Length: 127
Image 1 (cartoon, rainbow, N blue to C red):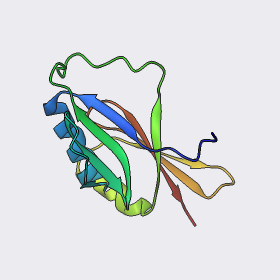
Image 2 (cartoon, one colour):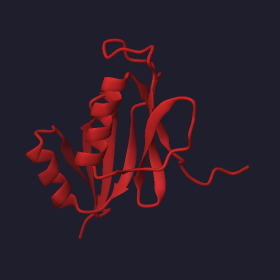
Image 3 (cartoon, rainbow, N blue to C red):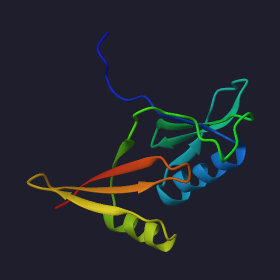
């Protein structure tokens, strides 16, 4: 059973935090809310094109002050387009970020954090 790719990332948090995370991923990063099966739990799925890449799950037993321990996970990364537009969106919303250029690759990496404190890496191919 070979792995063929990353299916999705799931964030589980309180309803208030999930709403802030949803707005960040849609308004700032440009993901789109889309269909989600009728699970017993509440939440939403965010899409990049036709692919659901971020699942947001509401856990009513959690609060914003007690994050779940996620072990050694450092960040997740998206392939992206529109570097300058993305930087402008981040700047307009006052979102802190760092840009790194990968030597000899034509790639730019933008690092930021969502409202849950999860590190996000955006990878751009640049001319």
